[in-house]
Length: 98
Image 1 (cartoon, helix red, strand yellow):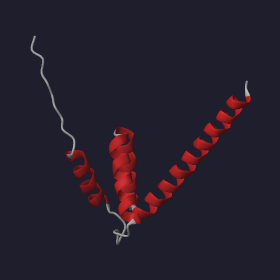
Image 2 (cartoon, helix red, strand yellow):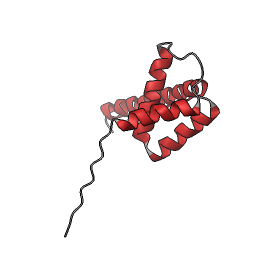
Image 3 (cartoon, one colour):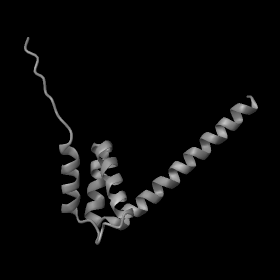
């Protein structure tokens, strides 16, 4: 293995470690932002639709960092956020008739 390959492997390992740390920080922040019920709902959404969950997490973290959250996000408010984010998607169903 060349020296460049070793350096590349170390860089990849460092990147993975950094991503794990960021993910842990994100989880901690979400746990403080969301009520227990809302956090559990977000976990269930993440299992079914990771993209939607990621969008909701990003939105919640952004408004939290901007100081726009005055209280913890309740489950019903999270539902509203999820509905608003999922309304932006168009669903087209085409039927094929043979």
